[in-house]
Length: 320
Ligand SMILES: NC(=O)c1ccc[n+]([C@@H]2O[C@H](COP(=O)([O-])OP(=O)(O)OC[C@H]3O[C@@H](n4cnc5c(N)ncnc54)[C@H](OP(=O)(O)O)[C@@H]3O)[C@@H](O)[C@H]2O)c1
Image: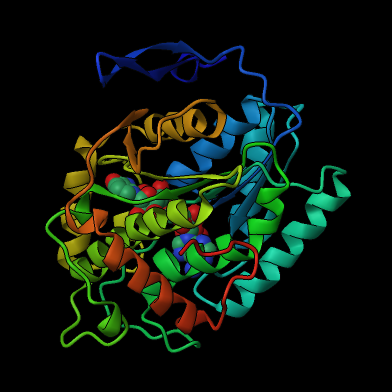
């Protein structure tokens, strides 16, 4: 087994603060659990799918391209021949496909005999240099990075509630710092700038998690946002050209390997007794920005997102 995945970190409470300590995960046995991970065809998502498969989790990866799904599935089977892994196709920029995906996931878990979902990792993400509107009339970055996780999570909550300790992990980013958003103008920016749209979507990931945590109080599901740090992936080469391409080709070389955030995803999927922290980096709770911790903003964003997808979730009751 690859030593990079053998050792993780555990957050231990010492004198009212969390410290890192070694946490050996080579003998983690999560068999019997099922996880869905979006954006599992490359970068962080692909490594997280591998890490979960190694730990015995039945993995349902989601990708938008059949060839890349096939290649990712094969790469996992090469390392973990006994793994239970399959990929489902969905373009997450299209709400109709997110709804279809939720149906296929329901079918897949019922065929596997478990009828429950233990972990949902909302990882897929894009950076779009140009302003593009999807068929649902939503700006592309917002659609993939925030609306798709919002809709998919809501549609899968009944399956997650059937697990003894369901987890919803949403991959955000440190780029949410020094960012603000107005839920009333989310889809209607005065000026479009790719980097700003990305930052707003990553702030939305944490606000979504904050409101989800509030709504999930009293249930068995836990929700966390993940900061992967700067990671050496292909992300900045997709949907970009010119200067952005050049900047990413230099910037990503200072990034960590995707194994590192994959360990945090594995840790948050597996560890019992985690604190109520919102935002995690390298298996430790870390502070999110002040904007990301505003309950009023989180609630308004949730309501605006419901309106953008036309849903009101009947499965979790809002507390007064
Ligand atoms: N890399 C970093 O430094 C960094 C830092 C902070 C946060 N993040 C976050 O980490 C997450 C993963 O990013 P990454 O760096 O691993 O990038 P990546 O390698 O480009 O992975 C992104 C994944 O999302 C998928 N995806 C994109 N658009 C999609 C769509 N419309 N429908 C379905 N799937 C779609 C991609 O599919 P394809 O394989 O088909 O392209 C890919 O599997 C993102 O949420 C990103 O915001 C990354």
